[in-house]
Amino acid sequence: MTRILGIDPGLTKTGWGVIDVAGNRLAYVASGLIKTTLALTIPERLKQIDEGLQEVIAQFKPETSAVEETFVNKNPLAALKLGQARGVALVVPARLGLSVGEYPANLIKKSIVGAGHAAKEQMGMMIRVLLPACGDIGEDEADALAVAITHAHHAQAKKVYGT
Image 1: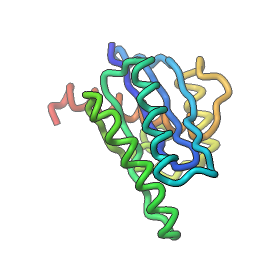
Image 2 (image 1 turned 180 degrees about the vertical axis):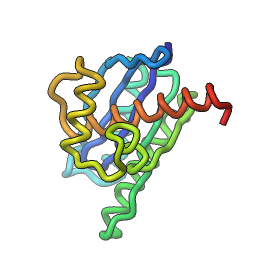
Image 3 (image 1 turned 60 degrees about the vertical axis):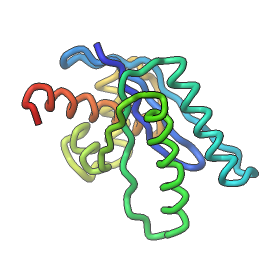
């Protein structure tokens, strides 16, 4: 069995999801949000994400992790802030000894729904089908679980096909 942490980075809300994988079986472990305080400076908010991810890793002890790649945003300032949050999401697991996979949003959607341009509602519905124990979760948690599932599928393919 392998425990995977999926991370959907964001400066305001960073979603996280933990699953267990045994062969082709997926099991929901936990998910949640790391919400930052808007009144704080960006460095202080990044610190909140850092501390939150450290707590998740300490509590659930994943063996590997994955992060959604940043998409190109029309707003350069928003893209920069997202990139900073994503940097924290990459470095925290790496600093704690976990391997970190990265997957583009279209690949995640294709892995979960079968189409690279799936709507958020479709993603949420499929996550609840694949992981019924997750219950009623928000978009950021569903996205983080989708990242973890994508990582599980691609890690399994690498083991099977040696790519």
